[in-house]
Image 1 (cartoon, rainbow, N blue to C red):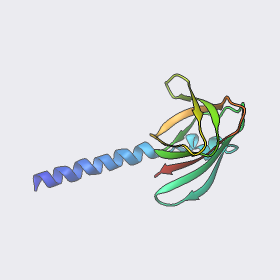
Image 2: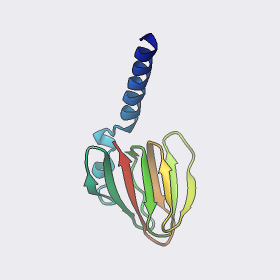
Image 3: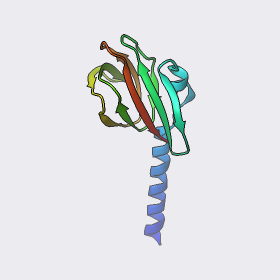
Image 4: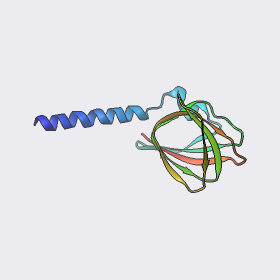
Length: 123
């Protein structure tokens, strides 16, 4: 019985931590911070789907994403800086799918084509 109780406590704390890591404070919500590049296309109790379109030369303000899957819809190049980190350049390819842990970042489209992607955030 003690083992079962311990397992339930550990799993419960893990779920609380996971959900807390995915919480997005309003002041960092991309729908509020960068509404010109992020549009809500679907939401339910499990996921929030954002369509993201970043024009060439555009720099997004700091914002947060929950854990998510990102589907790139075209080829584009970005420079992304995570809070406390160094800028990283990345070439995205149409049709690529990637996992991203929760992140606070700033993104710049440094290419010649608009960045276009779907961001499927876990709640």
